[in-house]
Amino acid sequence: MLRRWAEVLEVLAVATRLGFTCFGGPIAHIGYFRDEYVHRRRWVDDRTYADLVALCGFLPGPASSELGIALGTLRAGLLGGLAAWIGFALPSAVALVLFAYGVAAFGTADAGWLHGLKVVAVAVVAQAVWGMARMLCPDRERASIAVVAAVIALSWPSQLAQIVIIVGAGVIGWRFLPAATEGPSSVLQVPISRRVSLIALAALVLLLVGLPIARQLSPSQPLAVFDSFFRAGSLVLGGGHVVLPLLQTAVVQPGWVTNEEFLAGYGAAQAVPGPLFTFAAYLGAVMKAPPNGWLGGLLALVAIFLPAFLYVFAALPWWDTLRRMSPLQSALNGTNAGVVGILVAAFYHPVWTSAILTAVDFGLALVAGVLLMLWKVPPWLVVVFCAVAAALLQRV
Image (cartoon, rainbow, N blue to C red):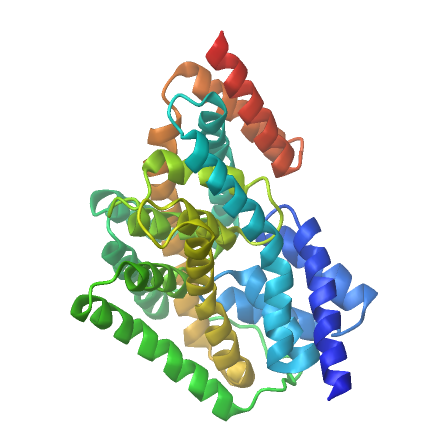
């Protein structure tokens, strides 16, 4: 028993250090994790790590956080998975809640530096769109799926449309895209029984179905917030920046958060390490009506990450079987192309339309894009540059 608790504390310590140092988004996180967990600590070998990366890329939700949860679970059981998430997510969540208090205290009106955060969001999302399009839409079939998905998302801006796009793209991929040909790799050993996985899956389905019903039967702001963020964390495929349109629909359309506050927070999220999904903590804290402040941030944070735990715990014991199903991989290829289309639509609205108001804004976004994509400047430094530059330009 003492040994297991020592392992849990070890996972917490290592994950917390990563939470303070992992800049650069999910792909960079995977590199940091491989260096720490595979090469330095040898908790898993390269083959097992590759299997986990494949699994977390397949699951909806924040891929890098799910990877950390899976690694922590392999090391120290279910509590190890929880410790891995707390350590990795807490530093950025606390920073973004503090930023939300600053926004609430000083407001967003006529703040040049906040407009700079919206401008840098243009460059960050453009980088994400380009990188995901190159990786997930390498042929004309998947590129065509992405274009159609973008047109639908722009013409029908709602959360329902995004669900329809994801499901429809998966069906098209299953029916028309070539089947995967990769063979199976080594058996993945996990300390989770199939009984636990079925309980996690049942809880996920129960919450997805039950929360909207409970929200209608008993109107409550905390319940509505939990439902909205839980649904965003459950349905997003691709993680990271792909959650942007889901969250924008969930919090801006009902009037909980203004579009200016939303994009300012999204820009600030680029300046902190750890998972981008901790952006939810900022949104929960900056909301107009209770729960807000740190309590609202905690509620939104738990709600958006809870599906990640349920997905990982539900899928791990079955992954060896699932990854051998070629039709499932074909459906995933189509779904990923649809996700790229949704992200293209989000890049245009609300990111571009709310941030690029003048030629100067476009020039600043262009500089930020060059710094990120060509010069490989750390994202947090680009965020600081854009905030300062926008504040100075406002004074000119």
